[in-house]
Amino acid sequence: MLINKDLINSFVNITSKAAIEAFKFVGMKNKIMADKAAVDIMREELNKLDIDGKIVIGEGELDEAPMLYIGEKLGSGKGMSIDIAVDPVEGTNFVANNLPGGLSVIAIAERDHLFNAPETYMDKIAINKNIPSDAVDLDNSIRDNILNIAEARNKDVSKVRACILDRPRHKRIIDELSDLKVKLKLLSDGDIAGALLVTDDKYDVDIFLGIGGGPEGVLAASALDAFGCKFQGRFIFETEEDIKRAKTMGIKDLNKKYELNEIIKGESVFCATGITNSDLVKGVTTVNNEFVTESFVTYKNSFKNVINNTYPKLD
Image (cartoon, rainbow, N blue to C red; front, side, top):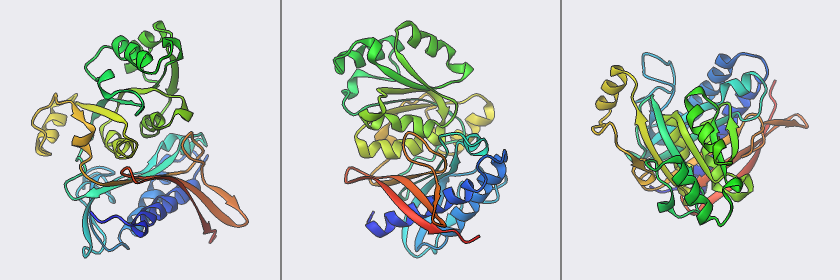
């Protein structure tokens, strides 16, 4: 796939505009309207591009979402064929309640190179690139993974930091990590951003683990790929409907452990623009009658950057 600066900037522009529209609802206790505003502008802007785009991770099925549904075609249809994964508002509760962590996210890859993840949970793990990939595995015990990280990074277990969603389903893992004296970073929401905290030592996170959204796992993997980080995921199917849908999407081995290169094949672009402030990027601000956005952008190993844009306030 031919990726150039103009194409990258086009997708930065799309998440920036989606973040701005969602920002208008920050603190208004209406996550549905914030999400709809971001979805509407994202769809409008995608349709302006000369691409043959298809949503593989979106806002649901055709009968569940009016826009950006899985399988929806976007763009003029005249350009390159690409798969598109979107999360117009990652952290809708953050936006509704004016809390840190709201993002607008998109990832793209060549057609059939972005894993079409079912709307189900995924057990996932991500580690810093400075940790040998064979030191940690989804099938290892929590204890073995933590001890291996401590050894690989030449530090005491009490200096290892693990990031995980603060959910009742994670009580056993959190208790085990606490017993090991591991430092914890607990997230109330937002497991895309949580996974990306392993990309740089400045975030002081060695491992991200636990059960979160499958689609969010694919989006995070797109960015992690650019940093050379390790990622593994295994889907969790709780109902017969989940299993049926997975098989319809071509998943044959329901217990398969996916490596990063099976989720993201070839080149991909990832872009996340802040709606509210987060560890990754600043949220939307207003300066001199303009909106200012900050975006976390990656493209394979050749491009990793934070990009700032300004847009006039029209109302």
